[in-house]
Length: 220
Picture 1 (cartoon, rainbow, N blue to C red):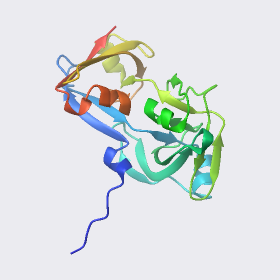
Picture 2 (picture 1 turned 60 degrees about the vertical axis):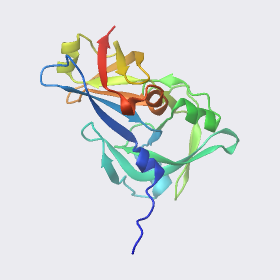
Picture 3 (picture 1 turned 90 degrees about the horizontal axis):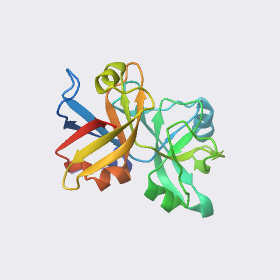
Picture 4 (picture 1 turned 180 degrees about the vertical axis):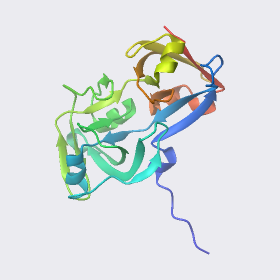
């Protein structure tokens, strides 16, 4: 009898653990709000992909994410912080970006010895750097290691319903055994974007999001 190989822990966590919860009073035609818990991950430029994985290499789709066109890749890298502290297999998310970036939770920063600044994804000026190690090469990032601030993605119709605009702030109420309200969610509005909140693993664990009975978006 054959024995199935063990499933990689990072895949078990799933780079994004998508949880669909009922939201009372949501926009017409939208009975559900998706709250996604993002595990540690890396975004890379085309150039850095080739440095880490070889000339001409393209990211391989392992799992499509909730937002159309975005995916968790098969490829992982080692993230090395000060004093050679490391996270051995950090998943890459695609597609590639104009600037490489590493998104970690607060506890990941402690493990690496990096004091993580809280930034909106893509805002990396003046942030700490790290070293990325792949099977074919090494990339030293001078900056780009952040804790992504909690945020909510939405399309224009959702923004109109809630009465908010891009870069406004909202709150997320999570009803669970650990009832929690997350304040100051950054609103990110874009065309063809689905309604989705992103929390990191520390935030998701703190409110026991996996066992939440409901969630609610609240305009400040």
